[in-house]
Image (cartoon, rainbow, N blue to C red; front, side, top):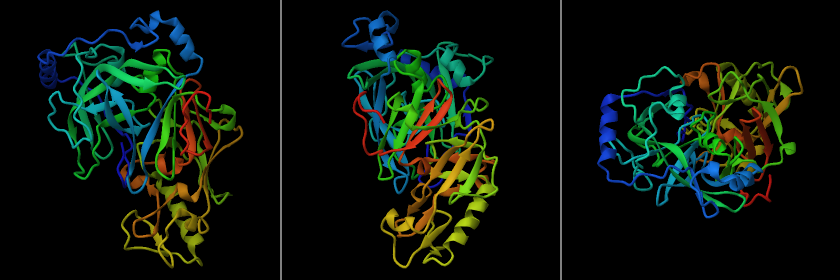
Length: 443
């Protein structure tokens, strides 16, 4: 999830059972009259059986390296979020979902009926009858413990809350996703999603959305579910364009030899965080600011540094801007720190000559360092007033403590790969306007 200004890093994920909401939702499903869903997980023109286990030909084809690619729409500024279109249900209907690597659960605003729902781009999702039982492995993974109550055994209730106090309450169920794979096959894949029938939107200006696409490390993420069915490797990635748009992908569509890799943390199993601490470099020079632990998260439009790193960055930028035709624009409230030039800036090309790159240098067990370079367009925006504003914020001021969060802005024009099988995070500069169309097109 994200906000146009501050971003949303997933801080709390709470799942529970509720006898009141469970009975209400359950009775709705019993009286809905919808036909029972097929028990098979995969259906396609090539597979006569609805069960993936009975179609070894299909699975062998996919295990050899297939992938799913989705075009992405949106930008960091002024839109403030990125989303994809997924076709879900029988018959399939389109839904716009915000992409979030900081959370696992994919959910839709749901007509169960809906108690509280915001404006949506499409009609509310009509849920299937295929509820996930409370003792199902996916429900257990949401609770993150085996010791949880099941007052209503036939369904799994959840509540997910985000850092800006946005939340969704609902139940977990299975439905069909229509997916186009890069090997040319279209499959209807049965996977879990949340039916959110009670949402809280603290910001009344929050953009219309149908739901959330959770791309995290947990079992309920779509990547994990596709992998468990033998369709793709447990790999998710994205390429967000500085011009707007881009793409996300499940599985392998990249040449691993072209990427810079750093190990994924084995201690933080919820987020895509680097195992090694990073050192901050300004303009290629060491700053003395180190031991930075970083999380990569598309759930935030902007990047957050802890207080120490942020203050060092501000001091460096103010020193660098001295003697240049840049003055702080105190009247521009787009972001906390903005500058104006002699005339309004029209493109980042005009801005680049005044600013230098920032680099996070990751180490791992004393081995060679992985350099994550953030060019000026990876930490600056041009506001609608024609000023240049800093898209790195003080995370300590919004309750992130010592954490450093790498948001959308700093991952622009890079292929980012999160390989859950090999426990690696990789990146390389790329043309994110060019969306791969087939398995023959690698990046």
